[in-house]
Image 1: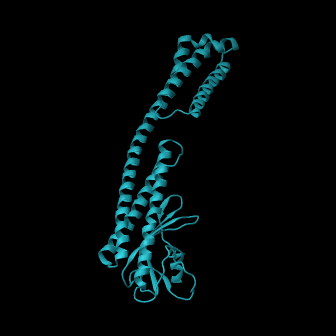
Image 2: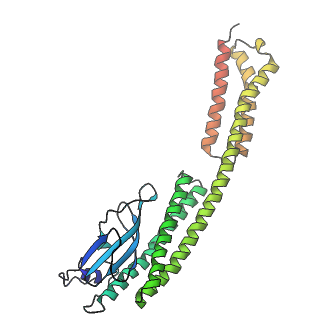
Length: 301
């Protein structure tokens, strides 16, 4: 990679600095945090460190997360490193200050990435808000898994900044790492708080699901028990087999009883009752009445 591109000055394209991706230890020089969020169709979070001697930049990515059906950790192929080091722009001098300026630029880029990590947290907060408002049907387990993965990624990034603070002497690099330590610590706290809130919501949702199941069981019992009770009061033999005159006198009280039971159950159902639920209840009542009507006409004399 041309280090002048890192400086935002393409006038001299022949500086010949080399960028390599390391898969293990063995880097030389002071390490600085390398934290980036890649762009494109599939975003990635990269966490590691970089070292430079002024002529070469070695990048060691210790962990990578990919957004594909939710954030999850997976190996990184190592492509696009040069593009990730182009910003922010700094003028790279010749001489002894060269490694320090490059290290400071890489550390500043990592600090700038904290804002992108904060943006990812905002996205997760929006997903949680949509779940609470029932605007989307994302699986709660998936949201919790993504929160855990993001929390791990941010914690790993903070570890890189704190490790650098113990080793590096460059004041510019230290300033950026100190800011990263504070800001990433705040992000970890907020992600953990959000995860705790989602966990509480999961417990409440489980209780609500149990209550909804109990209400549906009560609806099923009413749907089966009320017709049997009413028919036993009538004495079914006097009405069977059905004629149209007998049918409406036998089934109208059953339909009224089922409608009242269904309305009470829907009104007491936990959560917001939607038009779809009312239509489903109406369909069930109509189906039950239709089944009784057909059975009455087919009953033997």
